Amino acid sequence: MMPQIDVSDSRLLVVPPRMNLRRTASYNLHDRAQAQDFASSSSSQPPLSSLFYSPPPSPSLPSLVPRRKRSSSNPFSGRPSRVIRFVFYFTILSFSGYILMRFFGRNMSSLSILEEEYNMVAQDDLPDFPTPIVIDDNLGRSKWTVSIPRNYRFPLSMETYSEMMGHCREAAIRQTTDSSPTASQSVLKKHTSNRFIDVAEAEKMHLLPSSNILSSKRSRSGNFVGLGDNIENLPVCRSTIVYVLESTNAGIGQALMSMWTAYGLAKELGKDFFIDDTRWAYGTYTDIFQTPPVPKCRPPPRHHILPCPAEARHLVISNTNANEIIPALVAKLDEQSQMSDAKQLFTLARAGYSALFKLNKADESYTETRIREIQNKAKAGETSSTDAPVIGMHIRHGDRHPLEFQYKDTYIPAEVYLSKVQTLIDAHYNETAGANYKGTRDSITMLASDDPNAYLEDEMSSLLPAQDRIQLASKDNIEDANYDPHVLHRFVENTFGWEGGFFAPMFWHLGSEAKDNSANAPAASPYISELRAVSRMKPTEQTLRLRSLLGRAYMMDLAVLSGASDKVVCAVSAIGCRILGVMMGWEGIESGTWINVDGDYEWRGLDL
Image 1 (cartoon, rainbow, N blue to C red):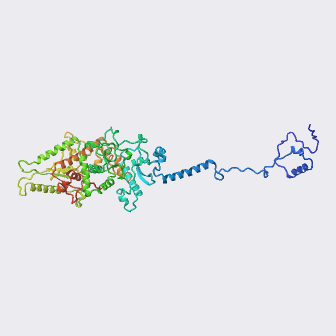
Image 2: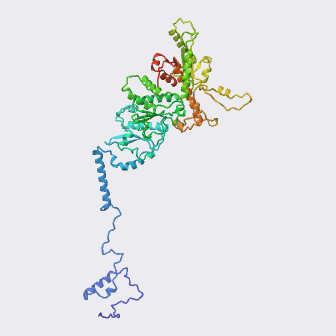
Image 3: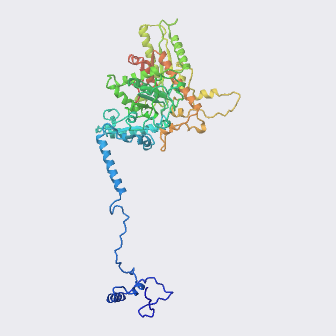
């Protein structure tokens, strides 16, 4: 039993009941020292007062126990955590594996290890617009190809094709191994130094997404002439040339000559040939010509058809790239041919003419009848013992001027044509009937011109039009047709005809209303290019019908002149004259059947 405590002892301190018994915040060192001395001088047990009065260390004084250091927020100041070390080691191993695969994995594409991920993700990584791209092949060598999004409609706009030609040229120069100063001028002709890889080959090597992936997004646009709907069972063509009938050139002759040349190149190079008339200014191809020969295969995926370079397996040729692609393709043939450049182009164009120049059934029937009619008139009759010569004249006015310097700002006078025609007539009778022939020297002279007023000139009023199925009207003809004698002052809108010849602005305005006569004109401005202006045109059905009639008239003129004439007189500055040369044949050019009155120039093909 513990002894009772005497509270009257002076050594005890009685705490009032309301006093807080919490430890004081401070104490002095002197009282603490007295308490220690008293405890040491008495018994070993601590005094009872120490149970009541034991103040803690003051927080304002240094702590007797060292404080624990806080952990730093910087993970790299101390030992890194396991996660950081794991990420660091994984990065090092991945990079090392990539380096080893690049240098030692020669039988595997640099992207084949990510084939599944690439096929799903790389479509988003490719550009969303047509442009050349640089890739690495399975040996780590830098190659370039052309990427066209699969959802783009074919054919692309002329402006896009024009921009791609510039980008292709730049990519070829950067990737070529030839560092000569003339590399930029002949890069399309140096196939050995051009590090181009075709789209199909890049897909086969898994450098580009396969065409079988996301095939639903693949564009099947384009109007390939003569190609039916049931072509899914046909195999894909191995190599093709697609000619797109779209141009800023309003004339139909330039498109024909370029298309025929492209066809000849396709046959020489073993490529299949297609024609696309999606945005042809003259309407539908079959409105003027018959369906061309169709290959026994179907066109490739549209993103495989490239405008550049010339080594591409599937090429598209149009007005925007013909001046670069056609010479590059002809250069391939020059290595195996000994012909001159002019004859080489003629041979190619002749092959295209023989296969493609077939007018629609109605126009073909008319031209055949017209040719027989003219030839029957030329046969010997009662007043002549020999057949009369048939001379054809082709006169081009409008926006095409002669090459000869003295006429370069005007036109060749009619007297020059007629003088040459008379010389040919005299030469014919001197050769067939003798120089002393005294009979009548009859002849049939046909005229085909883009200027309706040329038929009204005094010297040419007696000439026979090459065809009279479709004729160009002048302003006077239109006013005479609309004349009504019962109306005194009838209001008639301002009309215009083809007097003066064929002008491109008149062609683009054909069929448009007077209040909106600039809607169909591809006029360039500081803010819009001519290529974009033509691409934005949306001609009406009436406009396309009128343009088609115009094209049919020109084609029938050429068909009758080449089929019925013994001699043809024309100016080589006009593309129609060059087409007549192709129709007459190379032998006709050399023998003088085709005669040029525009200076001393010989036959020429495209102005490349």
